[in-house]
Amino acid sequence: MRSNSSSLRYFIIILTVSLLVGAGLAAIQPGTWWIGWLGFSVLLAVGVVALVAAGRWAGAGRNIAWMIGLALALRLAAGAGTYLALPVNGYDAPDDKAGYVFTDAHRRDEQAWELAQSGKPLSTAFDKTFYTDQYGGLLAISALTYRLFSPDSHRPLMMVLLAALVAALGIPFLFQAARLLWHERLASAAAWLSVLYPESVLTGGAQMREPFLLTFIAIALWGFASWLHDASRRAWIWIGVALVGMLLVSPGIGLGMLVLLGGWAWSRREHRRLSWRALAAAGGVLLLGTLFLAWSVSRQNDFSGSSPLGVLLNWFRESAKWVVYELERGSGQIQRLFRHMNPLAQFFFVIGYGVAQPVLPPAFFEPTTLTWRIIAVLRAVGWYVLLPLLLFSPIEAWRTKDSAERRTWLWLSIFSWSWIVICAVRAGGDQWDNPRYRLIFFAVEALVAAFAWSSWREHHSAWLPRLVGLELLCVLLFGQWYVARYYLVGIHLPIAVVLAVSLGLAAVIIFGGWLWDSLRARRHQA
Image (cartoon, rainbow, N blue to C red; front, top):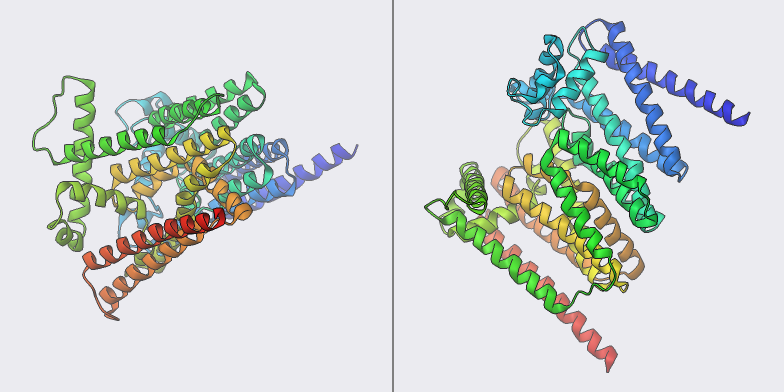
């Protein structure tokens, strides 16, 4: 009896909230108000029921309920807030005037509405008629959403609502995956990072593919964790469903997911050992491969295109050269810097600059509108809070006593950093595409960061404070450079000098920390 009463109360609350929020969203959108009200309300009610069911399945009571509710609220508020603010306080550009943060979202959303009104089958999204979505899956989903819930007028916030609901749905799956394999403290840390990470909030409140991919990846992780935990065959159904979703939205991510799960499965097998020789060999191969790819960028001639390797190298070469060109063209400072660099140094500079994006000092000091400054600062602060944890994670992983756990965390750290570097090479210093690509596997990055945080709280290693201190010093150095550049306060040093000082500080802190720890260990042994 109590269960029925509780379910009825939840249903009334969900319906009331959905009707009120739906009325508010419909009021700020074009078209007939009552049609928009019904569309928003029905979509929100169905989505919230799914979220409540997922939250109950994941357990953890109020903790998971707060996570899911806050994830939905933040993303919906971000989407509606930018939609209202950008036309008033954005740039004089088509995307801003229409209330879109991302150009890709604007183009795809416009064509989704065009397809929804055309009367053509949704399968048309997968041919070349609609060019804005190279895979077609998200375009088809968007067009279907408009046909069902907004048939009379183009309401961009309808897809924002769907994206926010889907993004929130991934939280309980990630939480449950981490709790199955480790413990609730680590699961809560990873889930809260996913809820609050600004880049995830921003894309989760936009008509982008990232919220869908994030949730598909979380579902696949839960399925894989379930299989590792109790060898459940049903887990493979969930992994299959998640992979199908990835294939619809972005097939390449499905391949990356298979690589992640394959390496993870290998790391969990018994009788696997990681020696210094094996790590040195792997590091040597990685270094040689990176140097070879960097050299390929400096080649004047193409590789032979008759082999798959030649095709791949030519694609990488052209992509990397384009990234270097775009980065150099967009900044006079970098043009002057690149004059004194050979192609190999330029390549590594692009990687470092890509990893640093979105750079924190310019978010504060570069001239822009208030709306874009708030967005830039939040995105940069989120990344710079996460970055020391990601750098610290392999250190703690190597110190883990359990061999299977050590291999697992090393693999997850390696995968995270490999993906971050790939995104840096692919999108270079682009402050939008690069962080957006990096976000796709944020579930893995959140697990790695949560592991680093949990380990530090247990062991209080000095390396995390050292890395945080190094980051703060670099931010202050570059912050002073931007202040001197834009506001003529302080000494405007050449950017090469600032880079050299930052690298010198990094060398002193890392080498000095290692030397200090070695001396302390010898004293304890004596």
